[in-house]
Length: 259
Image 1: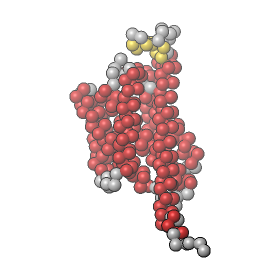
Image 2: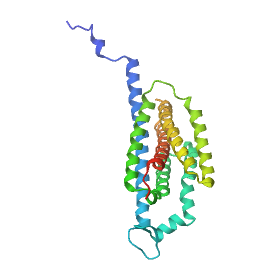
Image 3: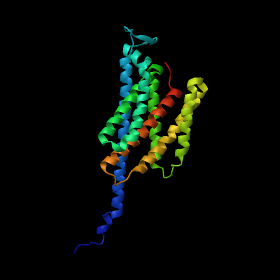
Image 4: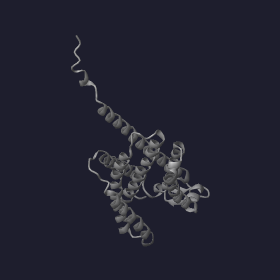
């Protein structure tokens, strides 16, 4: 006669099955967020270095201009870095990120993805000038320091049981203060103020990395359809991407070796 007394012992209850489903869905959702972000950073890096290589030469070129003892701008570089086009490259990413933020809920997932990739490429083009200012070795070093710091902070935001949503208003005020100080320093050109802005900027975006990770995690809802889930993952990736880029730039200002 069969013994059925322990049959249910190895079978998960409906509640545990639901929890497992949510955990698996959450992992898949967060993986999408990080994949989008990583792809965006890769596009930014390729665009930045690609434009730098096309815009500069290590030997004199006809119609070019020398910017360092070992580097000349090509005619393309002069157009991109010294003409009014440089303002287009600086402002275009800002316009595109606002467009994506306000229109994403009306866009198809494919259109939203294309806009995000385009934004990442434009950011890369606008950041290509860092290769004129800082040594490539220090750029690589600061990038890996940023990646390690970002990973640790995002992991904290994902795993902590503490509610850090209260950080939001404080970090937002800090962000506004940084923007105002940067505008003021355009006119003052103070190295001390620039150093203070960079140091505070690192702290603000470090906090935002943990805060946004927890916020993105809490945005997950098992009942969302594929379109809504994809939009949420994309916008979450955009938030983390911006935190990474800004943290990287402030760390580069602090620790990068200038040419």
